[in-house]
Length: 322
Image 1 (cartoon, helix red, strand yellow):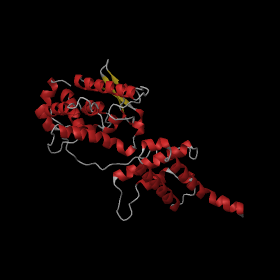
Image 2 (cartoon, one colour):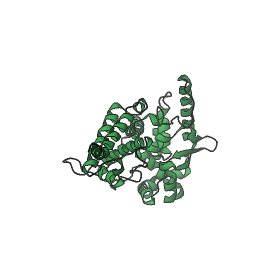
Image 3 (cartoon, rainbow, N blue to C red):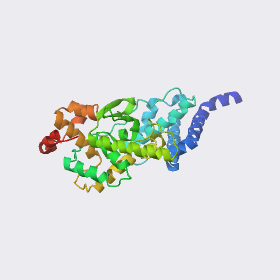
Image 4 (tube, rainbow, N blue to C red):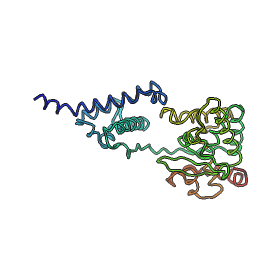
């Protein structure tokens, strides 16, 4: 009878072991360097909630933590508050993926059931507000006001090259090819595209690379071009997941404020919208906008084009510098 009882309780014990293993993994010094104590606490609480949710729906061991169950948890209503926001669902998905990565490393699961799950964001009709050519000149000047600050100018130039916040964060010094004047852009799922760099952008990025090299020498650190970030103060792997995009956005907002950009609708995304409109003004092809910005959907690329902007500034950017 004792053996039968142990056999019955073993699956439940598996869930407890999974929780303990993941909690311990998120408490290691390596994890503490990447995540704040508050973030680790939130991750632990959410994963424990997921296991409780799973057990209440019949899960008796880690083999029962299926893709369907994960999807149900990611979209589960909040207590007394209705459906979760897309941001809440994405955070749940991020925590589950991080947890299953630890379980896979420990050999408790053979695959991540969340790998193909996506969180759909509601389609909101937001009119693009691209910067004007004059505003771009002001922004570049304001970003370079402090000679010792190479971070903000580099962030601005990467955004003006058409990179998203995530792509800016993933950019490293080894991505800049000064000979071909191209920037390698790391997209999701290991995809890479190349975008051309104008004279202004290339000069700023080379100054940033030189500053990063000097900083590495001062700290007696190894110089690794595929690790040293272009637009972060330390390697990307050392940042908590939830702080990466805000770090980029904060730098761009500060640059916009320094340039006195207070026109209604102007925001960090306006830099990427400027690039979309500049590319379209020069080629007249939405396909080129999609390719340059790494946007798979032509409809999404088309929504970045502001026709009033095209009427006012297309001729100017066609004949001007990059």
